[in-house]
Length: 451
Image (cartoon, rainbow, N blue to C red; front, side, top):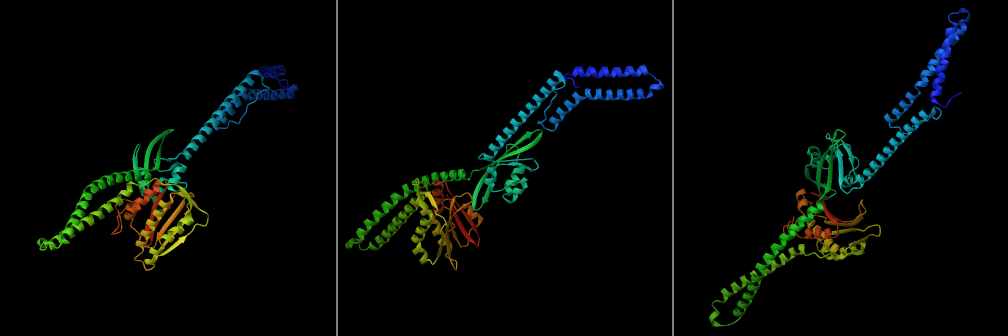
């Protein structure tokens, strides 16, 4: 029989124990009842053991509760429905505490998942690592920016960029550094900002990685545009009157030298020489004005008129437009048309102009080759962006030339003005696209347009 009250059960056990002691005392050491005495002794020991075990029942209950906290297992449920009101209330309170722990853990796990989702989807690359270089977290933006998978140590970035790996290890709290990075022919400048945090007594470094190449290019082009505007304005103001005056003076002298007046016969040769000089000044002034006007184009590109057109048709048109020039220079043009129906939303005339500039540059780059060849192709890259490539089998370029090739006024050709590729980059930027170069000495050059 099991009583439903803790005190009654305890009282009953004590009474039974007292009765057993009483009978043992009554029997005493009478040898006639030796077997009965032995039985009562064993019964006494059993009752003492059961009493101790019953008294430890509450201790075992608390021990189970503490173990559930220790091992973070809050699925444990406590039930003492048959041990009275007090014990039932104890079990109920323990269950309430366990449920509260479970709710807190669930809430923290939900918050952790929420912050992890934000961490992974934030647009800025984030990298957390220990002072020894062991990487803790690397978000998707950082993987996409660096074009890598999982990393275990900062030192693994050395193959990608020694400056980046060294900077992450040496930068202190609050330090910033700009790191150049070149991948797949695309030049990037990574702004690295490091902060040092203390998490549960351990130091953790958090580095933000952001590609600021577009912003730098925009500031660079803005500075060049402002400089070009000032220079062209001043040059035009100075050269235009000289050109006009020299042309007028040349016409005036020409009218005198054409007459047969006797008094100027002796001066005719001298006047003709002066007229020729003035004509040269006028012609060179007009050439300078035309030259300056070309540079003005860098600052006067119109807004693109976006239309949708077929890339295959665009490549066919480029081939047709340059057919005569390619034939004259005996350059082979190989066009690889896309396998699928590829539509591009852009300003067709601007894209044509960029492709014509790149193809003409390639024609000059291969003119000294025994079998000059240019390749024109279109495809989709890993991010499903339309990519048009212009390749040649020329001599290629040095690393220094690739870094400066898009700077205004810079040219690798003796007769180049240095504005063609600058204009092309401006046009691609207006399309929210990029133009990059891949080259190796002795193996040719490839320009990539990514839209």
